[in-house]
Amino acid sequence: MLSSLRVRLLLATAVIIALALIANAAVSYFTIQRHNDQQIARNLSDVAQGNGRTISAWVTSHAEMLEAMENSVRADHLDPVLKAMQASGSFLATYMAYQDTGETIFYDGWEPPADFDPRVRPWYEGAVAAGESIVTLPYIDTVTGGLVVTIASPFERNGQLAAVAGGDVAIDEVVSIVEAIAPTPSSFAFLVAADGTLIAHPDAELSLEPATRLSPQLDSAFLSNLKQASEPERMVLAERSRLLQSQPIAGTDWQLVVALDEREATAGLRAVLGSSALTLVLVVLGAVLVLGALLTLMFRRLQVVRDAMIDIASGDGDLTLRLPEVGRDEVAQIASAFNRFVSRIESVLITIREASESVTVAAGEIATGGQDLSRRTENAASSLQQSSASIEEITSTVEHTADSARHASELSQSASEVATRGGEVVGQVVSTMEEITASSERIGNIVKVMDGIAFQTNLLALNASVEAARAGEQGRGFAVVAGEVRQLATRSAEASREIRGLIDASGQKVASGTELVRRAGATMEELVAGVNRVAKVLGEISVAAGEQSDGIGQVNVAVAELDRMTQQNAALVEESTVAAEQLKEQADRLAEAVGGFKLSERNRSLPAVSRADNSSGTSAQQRALAELA
Image (cartoon, rainbow, N blue to C red; front, side, top):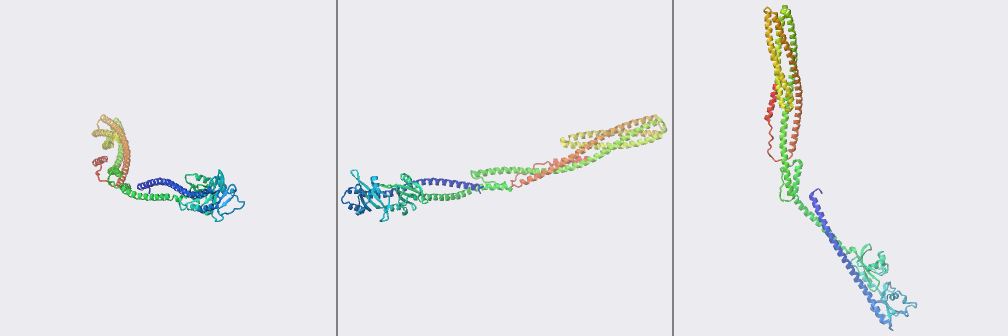
């Protein structure tokens, strides 16, 4: 899924928008949190101060009532004053204790026991020690069963303690004030003394209990620090995080502690955070939808480019396809580059197609020509083998002729000896001359055959020269051999003509000799001379026949070498034919590969292959083979 550029852009944009909204929400959250904390601290302080002042006013009003009795300390009738103060100040009881006598006067005239000494009472000692009005710790009244505190105010005369006025008052009103303090539904307040004793708490069972029951941290040291703290302190009470704000109660060592439930106090902040999260989700979803639609429109042309490239890459691509180049954006630039690229590829493939077609035609013609050349080369090799066999026969005949010439020379010598001995062998000489005449005729026939062989050899040498000239550099050695063969053929022809001339002359002379013998025997000297001349001529014939035999042997060797080279050429022609066939197969494969694309139609003319030259070369080869045959 992430392989799509559109999806990745969409995802990246969504992430950026989400991060931006998260950053904005975080800044807003922390800003609101700071202001909210300040507001909570102010509200908590206001609640604590307002209710603390109310409680302080309650304490101060009762203390001032007692302090107003300063002028009545030495009154003769104190009971009415105490009773009036008890009635007006909602005191449960009022009384005056004197320092000098230890006497205590109650508002209702109650007489305390004889051992009752107010000067050792905590409220008395506390007032004396403080030198001002004090409020004692609450205690349970035995009559009403409610919480009661004693307020005591000392009076002096002439710088000396004269008496201490006291009054017992129920703190139900104070408890009601404390119980009514609830900034949030789960928040509460409690009134605690300096020693950590709970004076008032929403839970009546905790009254007069140590504050450590609420939390082990609520000891006197913590309460002392809390009284001096300017910011709320955080603490876990009743398994919930609370913000504690303390307010001292004037005239007492009490302090009003307001415990604000932090979760409820920050509910608005959490609501803001939730709304920010919801806004984040909605904005991201909306941005994704809108941006997705925009990207779909923007990427439509890019998808066209992709589809075109996929069509080309699939092997059935249409290289005649061109993309519209509309606009100047990146897509238009890609389309322009794509069109240029496809045009270049199409041009290259068209060139390859034309070249492959030309190669295919040329390879076909090369293969055909190679096959024809191979066939003609085989025919030439066969003809050359036949020529070699004929030359071997000629060689055998020439050797036989040389042997006959030597034998004739020996016979002529014998005839000369016989002629010198006398005419008794004239008849034998006649017979011998007839044999010589027959041999001369055979020699003449052989010389004719040699003359024909020399003519054929000359033709072979001429054709070999033609083929060597066509072979170029590789046929240079063969041309030299052909020249030597042609020279030998020429010399053989000349020798044959000379031999034929000599044989003709010899025949005439033999005929003359025979005629002379038949005419009654010429003189022996003429016969001997004639026989000597015949012997000389036969010696020359023998020498010429030997030389001719040597030349024919060289021709035979040259023809054998020519046959070997022709066989090698035939093998090379076969290899060339196989290579031409492979070239044709590769050209067909190349044409098939290029045919997988659709290209523009252009001039598909093939390179000109000179069929005339090829046919002329073929005709020349055929003429040479005909001459060899």
